[in-house]
Image (cartoon, rainbow, N blue to C red; front, side, top):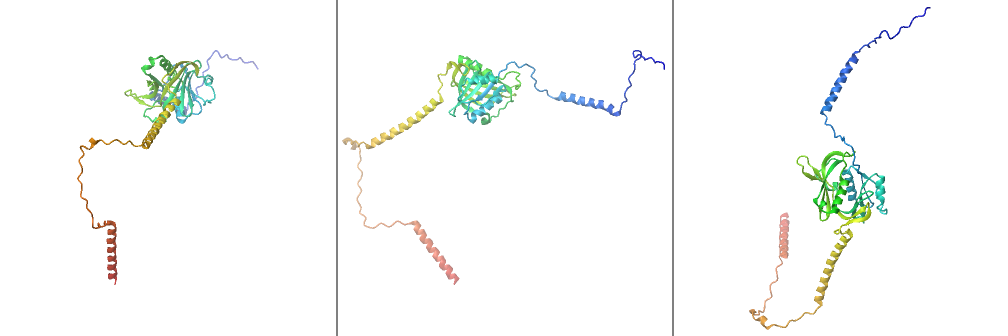
Length: 353
């Protein structure tokens, strides 16, 4: 057999055979077009959600926890603050025997640079520490007049995780220790911009007001229509005790001269009640002594009877007849009733015969 020559493929272009179209394949593109048109219409009508295109730079993290021995109201206050502050973290309760410097290590483990620590004493006194960990400064407050969200039942409401406005009293700029507290409160309570857990809305206000040498905290909702304020809660009062240079200790920068400890306050109240009781006892003893003392007889004053008119003397009458006895009306009524009853019985017996 003679060898056959192979054809080169470069000479002629081989055309591929077109596949046969079925009726089902022809209907599929039309369906896909209809679905695409419906999706486009839905995207046009859909309201786009809030998208944070910025970068999270201010990485403030707040550790909120407490010591053992707190009551239910303090626990609810902690939960309310955690709910209002999306940049906060929680931790287990700390033992009372541990020193406060341990909190700096806990903050470092939790990757937090600010701390709100609630310290309970005698199951009735509550103290709050605001600290910039680990270098300071820190401030210690006595917390009074606590009212939680569940307790108040206010009409205001806000979006969970939204960023608040911070409103400060003008008195914060007048004194240096209040200016330091203002900066500390701004760094703790302000939600960082573009935080992953925060919402890009501003619909409530935290107000810090100075009255009677105390800081009053309130939370209000901003109504969109007329920018009116409606309280949400919680609410509490901070009575400043000391400001320290370090975190949970160190040199004292400021000490409140108007502060009175709860123990001293209770002691004053007890002393006031005891003084009232002692006063009553002294009055009773004085009255007893007066009764025991002999009465002083004053000499007769002859001029005292000058204007006295003597009374007319009545003639003495001797009664010879015995007075009539008093009529007992109840007994008389009973006797009359008995007589009538006897007459009725006689009449009935006579009719029966």
